[in-house]
Every structure is written in structure tokens, then in C-alpha cells.
Amino acid sequence: MKDKILYGYSALFDNPDDIIEAAEKTVDAGYKKYDVHSPYPIHGMPEAMKLPPSKLGYVALVVGLSGALTALLLMYWISAVDYPIVIGGKPLFSFPAYVPVIFEVTVLSASIATVLAMLFIFFKLPNNAHPLHGTEYMKQVSSDKYGLVIHAEDDKFNEEEVKRFLESLRAKEISPVYYDENEISFKPRLLEPKFIMFLLATAVITSGATYFTLNKLLYMVPFNWMMEQDKLTPQSVSSIFADGFGMRPPVEGTVARGEEFYPYKNMPEEAGKYLINPLPMSKKVLKLGEKKYDIYCSPCHGYHAEGDGRLRGQFPNPPSLHSEKVRNWSDGRIFHVITEGQNAMPSYSTQLNEEERWAVVNYVRALQRALNARETDLK
Image 1 (spheres, rainbow, N blue to C red):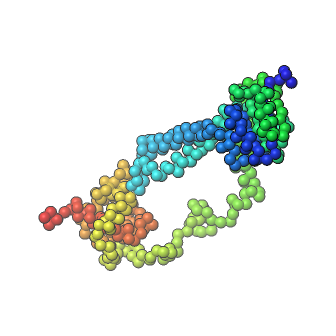
Image 2: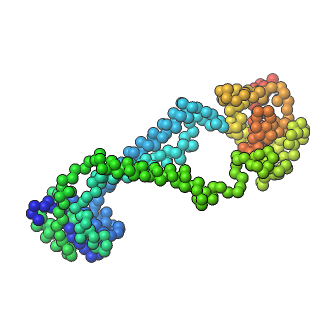
Image 3: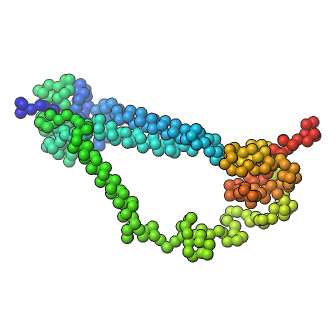
């Protein structure tokens, strides 16, 4: 045994209390390089060993923050620089909308970097050999014993003193652990041809199995039963109905639950004649109308309703709401246009409830009054 290189001395214990006491005394004795093994995690063991925080946390922190910053800058450049589009009056770069993506990229990049760092840096993959592998000591601590190993590379290590120290801990079995020849001569080589070929084979097999599963297997009986069902799916062609559409419009006169029937469908003049604005011209109502107008109306009509929207020619500009024709419309007539739409303008009855539409009408009146002030308004 003299020609072998000593890895350390191992000691076995029968219960978790003894191994915790042994770890505490090992720390008190001044040993720095040692390890504890048990068949399951033991509560309080990290404190007893006085283990420092894992360096893996720094890897996760740095890579996670780098991933978050990269995602943030990429989405900002796409949304605000390369392809700016105004959607519903929102700013070009709306940070809250990107928080879920940033969070996912942060977690994904940090977790992948942690695993890769653990395997290739801390564990030195493809080197998977270790002096304890296959020893009787490891077999027992993997079953029903608890063990402690003091490494020979510890600055305080002395073979005779270590044996006497382990005996003082009332260890059941004390034995030396030696390096095997292949462990001594092995030099970690990440680019070893055998390891690279293993990674390539794993990638090819995984990719092939994924491709076959998603593109072939799911289209075979019986795996395709859930996909090929006798039903109509949205946006699909149907041979049942004469118009060929699978999606059907609601039955004429249908009113959704919680909604009220609009009696002036396709009757703009009657709506202008009989509909009366139930909301007062109050500060609260105008604030609500301004908010909804800026979101849904200003992209086309502009913030002052002059027909100077922000769509940059992507959609026909609407006429100004300050024309004499619109100013002479009743509130009910404007409400009808918001509810049913007119010409290229679609209905906003699904985006705005009845109260919000009347609030928008009041805000439009305020804009008209502001840009078409009467002489009496200046006094």
C-alpha cells in the first residue's frame, strides 16, 4: 500500500447525532478539507460543518442578470427602434408587458448556467472518477451508515494524528482511502474525442426522437385521435354550412349575459334623436373619458380629435371631430358611432362598456368646446 497515493481517512458512525458531533469536533480541531456522507440530508449539518455559501450562487446571479439585461435591451430595440408600432395608445416601450419574458429568460439562463457550471467546472466532467466510488465506505453510507472523510491534502493532515482523532470520535470503522491509477493519471479534457462523440450522439438521438414524435408519431393511430375530432374549430372551413365558415355569428337579437340590448342597431338617426347622455359633465367623468379616449380613440383621431393620429399612414386618417357636422350631432349620435362603428371605424362596444362610451362622448364635447371656444367662454 506504500506505493499508492493516500486520498484520506474515512470513518463510519451509526446514527445522525454522532455524525453531527463528529463534524463539529472536526471543525474545532482545525481541519478544513473534509466531507460528510449520509443516506439522506441531515438537518443542521451545514451549520455543524460551517460550510461557506456555494459559489454556484454567483454563477446563477451573474448569468441570470446578464440574461435579464440582454432580454430587456433586445425587446427595447425591437419595440422602440427597429419596428415601432403604436398599439392602443400604449408607449412604444411598455416595460410591464415585458416583465414575464424578462423573468423567464432570467430563470432559464441562470438554471442552465448553474447546471453547466456544476457539471463542467465543479465536477470536471467528463472526469467522473473519484477515490470513494466503489468503496465499502460509500456502499455503507449510501444505505444505513453515516461517514466522515478527512482529506490528505488538508494542511493539518498527519496520518497518525488523524487516526487517533477519528478514534476519539468513537468511529466504528476507520480505513484509509487511496487513489486508483486512472484517477492519478487522468487529466480533465473537455474536448476529448470520445466525450465529443458522446455529446453528438446524444444530440442526434434526442433530436431524432423529438422530430419523429412531433411530426410522425402524433399523426398515427391511436395518437391522432385527440387531434382528429368531429368538431368545428375556429378559423376552419366547414362543409356543413352553405357559406363554408365553421365560425357562426350569434343568432339575430342575441344578447350576451350581463349585457343590455341595444335597440338602435343600424338606426343612427333614431339613436341621435332618442338617446340621452346619463352622465354629468363632471371632473370624474371627464377623467374617465380622457383615459379611454387616449387609449382607444387617439391613435386614429389624435389627442385633440383633429384627425391627426399617430398611425403614420398605416390606416386612413379619420375626419376631424371639430367639423360643424359632428359638433351639431347629439350625444346619442356620437354614442351610436362608438357603439356600432362607421365606415372604416369598427365598433368599440366590446372594448368600452356603456358608461365608458358616454364618458368618451363627454370628453369629445370638452375637446370640441376647447378648440371651438365661444366668445362667452373667454370672459
